[in-house]
Image (tube, rainbow, N blue to C red; front, top):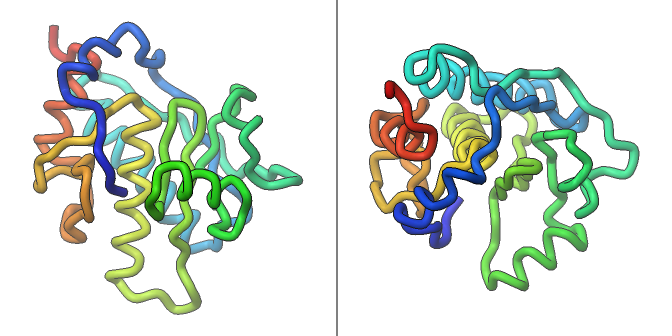
Length: 184
C-alpha cells in the first residue's frame, strides 16, 4: 500500500469509468491455505461493508482458485479474468513496477487484477495475517475503482495502514459512495 492516489475530485470524474458491479474475482492457486483464507475474507469484507449495506448486493463474486500456468504477466491485465495474484518480488513485472515508480510495493491494484507481493511464511503471527489481509483489502478497493485517501482511519489510506483496521471503515464507505452513488 502507499503512494499518492488520485485526488478525490479526479475520482469523481472517473465515475463514468467505474466497473459494473458485482465484479468477478479469483484467488491465485499459488497462495498458501492461510493466504487463500485471508483473501477470501477480504472479499467477504468488501461485500459485507461496501456492497450489501450501501448498494443492497455483493460487489465481488468469489470465483474460487485460479491457476495461471505462467503466473502473472502484463497481458493478464487485459484478459477479462480478475485475479488476486501472488506477484514475485523478483519478477520482471515487479522490478519494472518498482523502478518506474521509484518505490517498493506490497500490493498493486488495478481494474484488471490485484497483485500482492507480501507473503506469509510458515506459522504466521496475528500481526502478519492482519497485514496480509489489509494489503488485499486495500488492493481490492482499487479493483473496485476506489482511489487512495489521505485519511489515516481508512483501509484506502495512501500510506502504511493501521493493522487494527480489519474491515472497510465509514471513511472507505463514504469514498465508495462518492464513486458509485449509493443510496440515491
